[in-house]
Image (cartoon, rainbow, N blue to C red; front, side):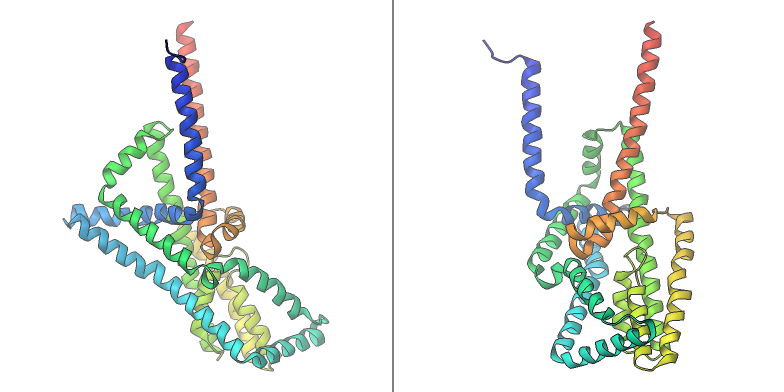
Length: 347
């Protein structure tokens, strides 16, 4: 005689599945960023893959390889280039520490005489060093982990594209939502990803380009380097590229170059800092908009978890969470309405 009945066996099996699932999720925590990046890349390049295979009749293997190469050149190579530029700049100051000390002393003298804030730079450097340690861990000590994450991301992306129709049918089949809500979730997921990645990416590129142009106009050094740095810092809410042009203006003023200092400060405050409002308005009309609070909290969550990639992954993960809550609320209301209708009919 069986110890457990049919319902008890199903419940026990469900408990085992939940425990195993939790163990698997815990084991995958080290590549959580790669898994989320895979979702982002799939969402961004799925329309491209469908167009290549259906409209242009490309072989699906060729289309997969083409998308992987193009995405690698678009996203991975620029990040790698930034890493090299940052490391080279740090090495430059290490080779000539006197240069940094002279700049620091001039800025401290400037703040001490003009703003009555001596040793202000020293305090700022300490805070910046601590923050940079969290922002660039993969650049300094996690190159192997970063490489593994990229390999895992493209490995998953390759097979997701090859069998994308089967993959999406299985997602709908095992989705906790009804099919209609699952499809709605997919559409919302697409627009959320576009708004976070493409929208913020366009803003970052425009702001970084303007910072670079401003450096050229006012004769400041390393315009291209600081323009690239501004692109990545533009993902930071509230401050963004101001972390570049404000210190540049202060250093120029401290060196006695008032024209360049005032010029780059005005250029940054009036043009660079306000251009994102115009771009956000245009993006909101065509793609969608993400509330600044989501961006701020997302960055706070993302940087400790994902390093510099948290600038993008953090807000996106938070947006996905809020989207899931909204879909759940819609599904719950529909279920309650259906139960009321059934109860009324039975009466």
